[in-house]
Image (cartoon, rainbow, N blue to C red):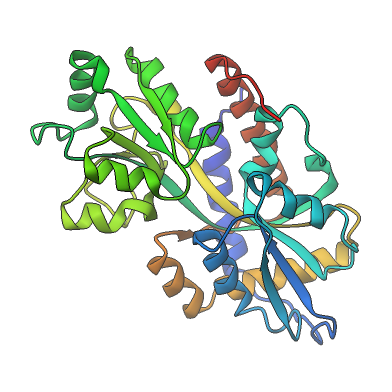
Amino acid sequence: MITRRDVLIALTGTALSVALRSPQALGEPFAKTAHILTGFTPGLQDALARLVAGQMGDYAKTIVVETRPGAGGRIAVEAVKSADPDGSVMLFAPLGFMMFFPHVYKTLRYDPRDFTPVSTVASTPTLVTVGPKVPAAVKTLADFIAWCRANPKLATFGTPGAGTTLHFLGTMLGRNAGFDFLHVPYQGNGAIQDLMKGVISAAVMPIGSALGLVQSGDLRALATTGPRRSPFVPEVPTVREAGYPSLEDLTWFAFFVPATTPAPVVDRLNDAIQAALRTDEVRVGMAKLAVEPDAIAMDDFARLIASESERWKTIVQATGFVPTD
């Protein structure tokens, strides 16, 4: 049986070969303005989209990044679904929009099959951190689990919202480790703010959300969810090293276009994305955003979506989560 880890290992090799291949001639850029839609208010996703778009001048003379927040990002997805399939409108979004949302919403006004996945551009692990509410003697994930079992009323964790992958990662940690881990949902970086104040004990957040506070010593990082240690916090072990391999997870950011977009246009867009990812400007910019370049293109990308969708379907069902509208 092919496991998720097998998929990740195989895709790592493919990503490297894609990143290193010689760029194909892109020809004249589109005269038509291209639009990249994102589903959230300005933040990491928006900054990453602008960073890559800034190096895609060979694709279109003008590229506009538009934020279309609302409905958990679904408004932007629906807008791209109904856009002209000529390569002038594309979606830039976390992979969860395609492989996770179908399992946490009762109804979606789109199906992942409505889109052609073009390429991922970057990935980032999740970071499990604790704050001043947890004694300084707690330095590892094992220490924290023991403390939570001994102090069940204090075992709380915050995330950017209920029904997110981060919510389920925290819930699964509690289930796998045998303690009740109470989820406290927030908006944006509210969880980090309350973690610093001692309102909650832990946070399960993208690594960039807490990196500065971890580096300053204000927060303690216990584990990352990536398949290997993060170069941004190399001293922090992975969940696999800590004994919880089922919590291994990455958040990918990727480009999509309407499903009926002609293959030559998709190829042209993919070439422009890969060329942008090879530039020093994008690599340096990604490091500042605490994400790593991670280019998985087209066929392998579709395979990753299918694999991750099945994994998250199993996780969501195991927690007893009831899909919402």
